[in-house]
Length: 319
Image: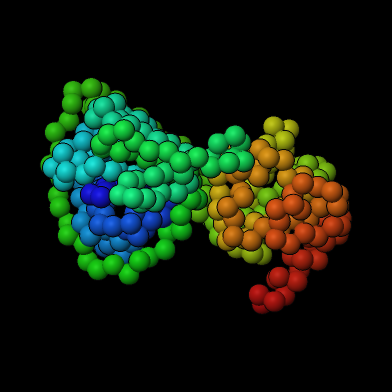
């Protein structure tokens, strides 16, 4: 399948989710990538290491700002020039807008919230969670080009050992409406450490922490592990922690190597956001908490006594 993957980048870094989608596509066949924005050319080699045999780059002034419509124009042009019948995206605010705009532009089918992709009897089949992630449904397309938007954390961004890709410059032609929007400013939240989308380790807190001040327990443990802090919807709704840290059906989907749940009951709405984690460790004083049903390691006890000792032990061993 002639496949194209949209690689989103911020500054000088390609997004982990997009690289994961690229690596997955490379495992199915020949794949190309598109990088649009300042510094795109410098990132072509990294795209090649994750499986792209060809990298289309566009550093035109029209894509200097992180707005979707100019990128839709660039993608539509590359799809036509390269003859791609499949275009893949890793979910983000920008990528979702670009995917929707491209679907409208090309009158193409877009499947979203996918978690996997496979070839079966010569056809491309996607996997999409349904019924609150209790089952997975096979989805397909009735025509080409096929567009797919993947849930965050669906694939590991593991280098495939590819060589230097062919690099092709794109000289775009923009529609009049595509250049009508100008971004007048950006405000970035100040933070330290990895984001919950990119972290290999996440320490998440729930109502069992007791009060917002006790999130310091999660923060100290996350710091010792070199990870990020997450939260359940209940605690962010209560104002205990920022919404940017919410994990779950109405929050962010994460897939770290290690997920430590502190005082989290394990409701289905939270489970769907972290169930693809590599190893899940739960600490809860309620032995009947649902989270123990899908945890790899469960500790029944008072987290206020356990977590400080665990944090100190990790610091000692790290030193």
